[in-house]
Length: 407
Image (cartoon, rainbow, N blue to C red; front, side):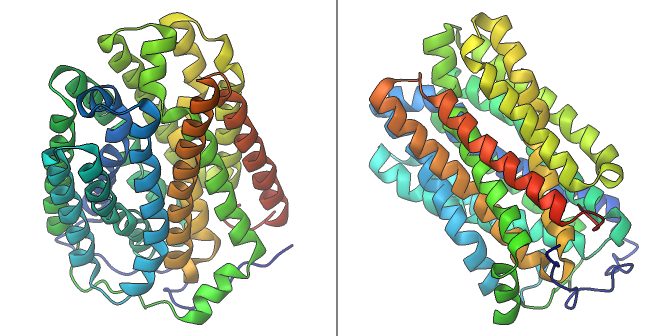
């Protein structure tokens, strides 16, 4: 068994940094979940409003999809770099400012006159996500007892699930009905509201110790931790090979109208939320690793059945396992990373977040390249290959960490 890194820079395993009585832990968890809701809406707005954006700006679907891949690459590179740079910052200010940056950036995106100007502004805007998502998970992991860490991390990622239920279909509806610019502006509103909630709920003075070069080295040289991060990247690649192009696929291949596209996104998001709610109930009993592997298997099943989907009903059925596994698997993987080596949670979660978006960038870019060659026909096979690799490595991690907390 490959040993995980020892805990040394966070409170002992049964302790947590205290949350002042005036700011309850529950309100803190909800505020961080609201931040992830805003981040999720911002990340998914490009895919949700893609139909109107490509029409409005006069670019192809494959080119428009690069808004996903380039922004994802920026977050992938930014998450570990920002984690190294902001180690000593007060987390109340850091998390609030990251959401304010995200809000302003997306409002500016809505004002861009063409694709050439939109792409760099969007890339800069999403750096707020590179800070908020991993640091929110890392800080909550230091503020709850060890027996609740998995559930607490999974809970704040309910915001991502809610963004799929509310944000994704809303972006699709707003984009189709009023234009993509209004969808991006709406992300700015959500992010500003979340920034206020975090500022009010987060206590001042929370400053986790800055990670040393030795701590980063401990992560990069640990086979289990790096395999865990590889699972995240591979599963993200598999999902976003198809997910990036859901909206045009539904319109052009399945043949559904704008309202039905929004309905499919809502259906996907609703069962994604259900999957995450079930996860928060079971993760500390089953273990984060088993929950991850089950979620990956559910998504692989959907992708394998993708070519069989026909019409609104068929697509709804094919999407169901994917929806149940998508956000729950992501939340469980964040919890798995957070509890595997608590001393290194800041670095591990930053790298895991980086891997999420690296996978999205690879999947979106790869899917776009395949579309340029043969349309949509090769996307399911490519997506399934990525997912199969993720499952194999996840099973290997389970065997290596058998009997370990968070396995």
